[in-house]
Image (cartoon, rainbow, N blue to C red):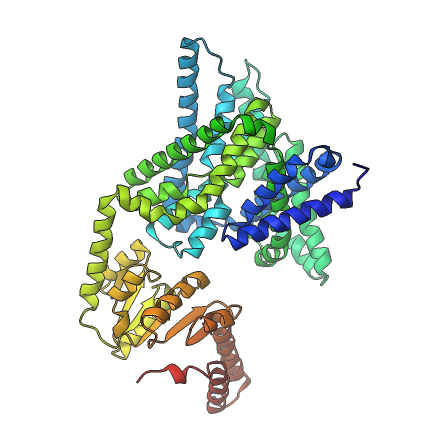
Length: 582
């Protein structure tokens, strides 16, 4: 084939990426799997891509830097404190258990193979890298699937989110540890580790000692120039500058990007930066997964497929079993523990980052790279299937879960059996609580359902009528008296969950109106077409409250303000009266 230009290579990359993502969307699979598959196919292109492979790999590394930057943006103190037991209890234990288990397994195999006079080409440093990579799960895939299944607030959902949060946080010290392991000599193990930790502590200390204030002041100065281009240039400069600083300090670029994100998260510009950088982050992260797929040598895999299946099935099974046992001994019910293990059993995007770093530091033999990478890819591809059939798997092996579900449904039915023409409130967060208090003040019967076990327990102890249940499940809605209800209100902000509820109500109780609360009006038409009687956007109601208070301070007569607000509200909710039951 003749000479090819960078634009030729770029177009082919984009073509295969588009095809892979479209196919995954059609199959309801995460887009990241499409990038991986595209990379696997492109990897068979031979010398066609060799000239520009280093350029694409550099761009992909930039994607990892932006990924760590976005993770840093999301790590705020209130979020961590809200789930501190799950993050620093269960999450920390999960990572440590997998890493230590891998190291122990390494030494067991080492001595066993030595006894059999067989060679084992893996050092304990390599075992640390493998254990750290295995401990990571795919935040992007699992969170997306849980959001679609409306399981974010479920008991197992909170455990999974806690573990994923700690995994993301644990990447930072691991990015310090792995290069230190790579530079060790026989006599200076602790010296290298100590120097790496000292440098990391010094950089973090300096940044957080004066960095937050400096960042806040500098971004305010840039923002006053009223230039979006200048603002984003500064964000990229600060991110890459800190990445360059940490890399030249002997740490890693990803760690500097993470610190940049954490610094910006403490300013008033966090949400603006998050919204503007996300499209670049998603695209560059996709390129990273393409390069991961390209590293797979199809010829080698063709002759090692049995070994690859072994490396896929056994680690997934062991990780699932270990996480399940850990969740069980942390106090979770059998079914919750089993679901948590299934949801966290696969490899994750940060596992690729850590493994690539380990290969770069020569901690893992090159011949291991293809089988391990292939096994990680296969485990991620299998994740949607495992999660889809998680309930069937749990019910088959945990009869207690059947009993727990039956008792839950029976409890809901017993508490609601005397109610008629009541309102089913799906979600008992702040919005749901306010609605229930208003209904109670007007002597209107209601049945509130929520997945958060802690919230339900606290509410019941406070004599509030809340049931533990999943409103996206037909059995739970029917137990709450769906066919006898006057209305169903979706008070949580979750489009996927709302669509599930609308589908169930439309099929089994079409006469019952469903009122849906959303954060904004972006999905109004989608929800209306799915059968919502009305969609209440938070932003609209907030704007009316702001207008009301503004008019009041401007001195407008109160009756004029009331008429104006009522006119705006009636025009927005013009269809509401048509669906109201007496």
